[in-house]
Image 1 (cartoon, one colour):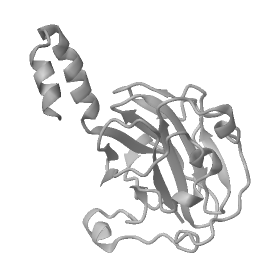
Image 2 (cartoon, helix red, strand yellow):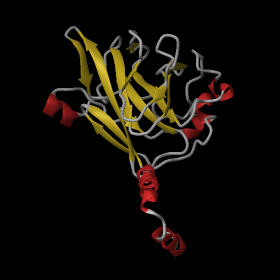
Image 3 (cartoon, helix red, strand yellow):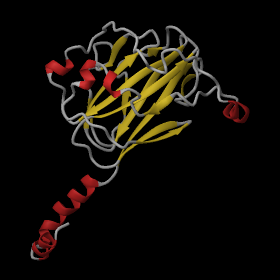
Length: 232
C-alpha cells in the first residue's frame, strides 16, 4: 500500500474502520464446498466424489459458497454429448447462491442418474458474479455435441486405486472428483462466453466426505472447475 494512503487513513475518523474491514474481508480467501450423495435402499448417503459408480446410480449434490453468485452446471457425458443440468425446468430455476447457505442440486425431487458407456462424466461448475446474458445462456438446454478430440478422458476406463481399496474397501479413481478444467479452450460455448472468464489459481482439497475449492480472493468474474464422475 502506498505511504500516501497510510497518511490519509491516519486522519480518518473512527467510523471509517468498518469500510476498511469490509475491503480486507473481500480480499480474503474464499471457499466452495461440494458434497456428493448417492441414493441407496437406506436413503441418501454421502459418498467419496472419486468413487467409481455403477451405471444407474442416482446422485444429487450439496453446494455451499462463502461468496455470492449464480450457479450453472453443465454435464459432458462419456458419450461426448453436452447437457445442462442446472438451472432447468427439471432441476430448478433459482440458481442464486447466497453466502454460507447450502443449496441442493437439483432443487426439485428429481435426481441425476449415471448412464452411458463406461468412463467419465464431466460436470462443469460455474459460479458467476451476475446472471449470464441471454446470448451466453441461450444453449442451456439439452444439446448434442461431438466428443472432445484430444481429451485424455475420451478413451480411459476408470480404475480403482489399490491403496484406497485395501484401506477402505472402496473403488476410488484418483482421476475423478473436483479439479481444474482440463482443456479450457474446449469449454462448452455458454461457459466460455461468460463475461470476465479468466484463469485462476484454485486449490482443490478432495476428501471422502466432500470437496473444497479454495479461491485466493473474492473473484470479480466466474469461477469454473470440473467434477469428474467415474462410472463403469
